[in-house]
Image (cartoon, rainbow, N blue to C red; front, side):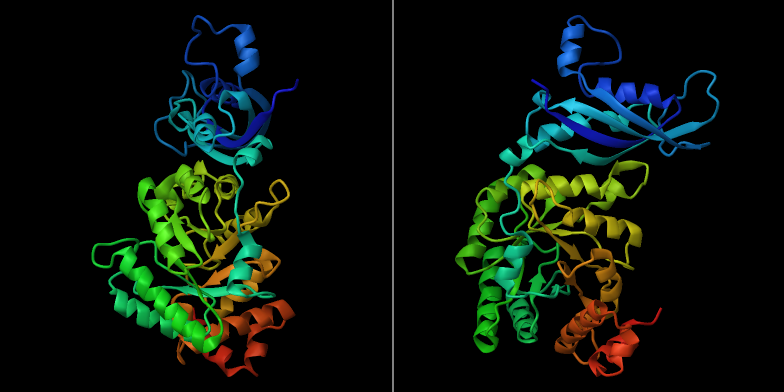
Length: 419
């Protein structure tokens, strides 16, 4: 019977040959260590050893990306880069996200033979699909709960991020819900602080949401930040559901992928996955993880909505990288596991054309804080301008042309369209 295997693709950099680097990666993360040991038989290595599947040489550098590498004696001063694919027997760790990460990442980033390493992608066998059911709601469920079809789900983030009392937050949410907003989320900085306990916040916000729904006939989706220790997640989730809430948010890096998967076992509403802290794993191009690999694990663990950054944002990430992230989230995984990409950071109506071009569809959640709330004519106009920006994008009409007959959009351009 053929072994099921996980294939990890690495961007590796080394002062040695790529072949040696690949062998070190495969050995270190399976049966080998720095020297031969008793019991490491050929039979054991054949059954449990990782295999180098392919090596694709890339460019060479004259300086290392990372400190701490140890070039060999007589080193020629060149640091070689390449894409290395290594496969690992599934039976080494089983369909377990935590143990998978120990195998494909583990101690690799610390090896002296490597002056750079980035996990680019993971090809996972279907055993992971049997173990992890993935998103319960995804794009379709999020649309059903918001009642929004045929356009992006548009929303905003609570600002100021922190400091509002439950009463002040309630008033803000009601005003925004009456403005027609589809979605509002807590900021990642505001979870369950002593000055505004989650229990009080949930009660105040949901009362505002319900009042607005009675007036408009539309129930806004509010993503409550329930991030906390593992033993707090279910209690926090249940608070939201009992109050009639339709979304919870967790900071995935804070609770961990195992925490996200734990939440997904009992969640009754969509899980909004925030990726704050992601930059420390990916900002150096020769270190860490590529989002292509990371989002697969988030989808497995149950993220129904997942942040991908924004185009032309305040952050360092290039538009090409954001586009790859959107594409990754919407690429089928075992025929399903859909998660809605969440585009945010310095967004406004004028961000719609580039976002539509990157996504290739309207199946995105597009969030704008100041780009909606700071519209010269208020939040209602800000929300309307976002819808108009997307109408122009989908119809292929230049923004300025569409704005000529839509004053609300024109006012947004005048406010936010300046460099």
